[in-house]
Image (cartoon, rainbow over all chains, first blue to last red; front, side):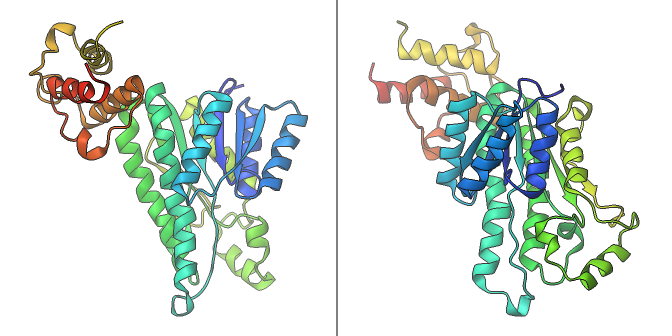
Length: 246
Length: 79
């Protein structure tokens, strides 16, 4: 049980990849702070974990709001006394071609995906600095490196997350805190389930492993980066994309 | 109960891992006590916690010596 006695805060942890990450960390013994913008799904996910004997609690916050994030970290510290692992997974899409993209669509995606990650790193750095240890994993995306038509906002936010990851890694390294990113490729989730069959097939032609990834594929990479096995790894982007980007 | 000045000196010794004899009013955190930029941020965090106050960034930037930190804290808590 590699994470016994450790508390992991997972934003967007109630559904999709975030929930799969919660599963992986809990399986290795972690205590879970499940954060979501939706109270009912956060509560339901935390309750499902508790039924199986995992120590878990639900927290509601909009990571785009610094005030919300400050309150969130206060609540999690009051409940569990520490935060050893932070997973910045909360993310949204508002796809549109640049010519058609509205300012609100741009702003909303940058606010949650990029500013939200910054807000949470800032809030987590205080307890982690004091503890002289900690692990932060940010969920980026292959499109943050490759770009993707229709996702100017999303790809910019994820490229931003990669730069932020490297800066945070440099600032916090001297205190035993590692900061890495995982960049998923085409993963089968509710978000990608909306794609047409045609779009799905087109996607798979550029994936050498010729299958969509699963949330578990991503979650296992996150678990590795939080484990002792990855103690000497920081500032890296681990691509979990079936070989899409080489 | 130790005085605010003594408490500030104790925090500096602990945060920066230096000897108490090195910590004079004139000692500069960076040049004399070997603090890096993160050390100075942590020092301010520790002072905030000890004295239950929030030190604004523009004030924190001015605290470069032990004496300045002591004077600032004395101004807040009195004594």
